[in-house]
Image (cartoon, rainbow over all chains, first blue to last red; front, side, top):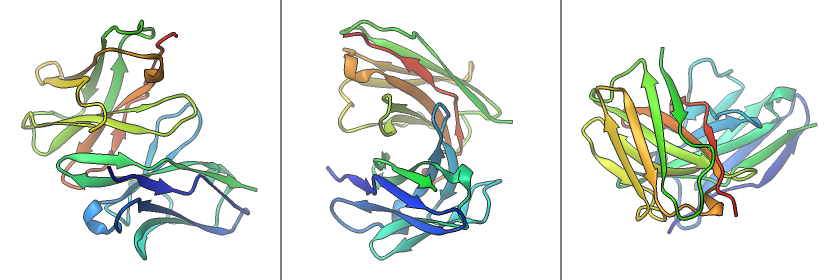
Length: 110
Length: 120
């Protein structure tokens, strides 16, 4: 079975730019996988950031953007802020009604 | 205003069956193209999609868990029910329900989650 891969951890300085990626253990991610991204802080439900590759959910600041970079989906945070220090998860639609979560990336802002 | 809320037992013994209910408001699960999924998260670990039911009663399950899961809906009560058989300590997790609206397969609204513990 295909596995959705994410970097386990990443760090960025306040004001910096970071790109998190979402790939597949076998194959390339395209817009047909409808990649979406979620932010989660400890003890809270996930918050939807990006869907359909690059559409920001309502109320999400424009410093968050989504794209396809090479063979992966990507979430870029431009001008990172302290409260971006969170876990980030991607979701891919695998077909036949199945979606898969990535293992998540812990982003540290320091 | 769309809301979802999970309910169910906080503690389940090994081998027992877990039954969770997602009660929602602000939308109808008999209206195309509404869908409700269950997602879980073991303590300190990643999110995992479990199952989904659609407005037309189509049902989809995680490949690895499908033999243990059953999802159903009661549109008159605005509820979605998930049952998971043969519970094990590794099933200890926070269980979330989440809505999908449309054909882009993302979760636009989430419940607050409910922690289910299976003691060893």
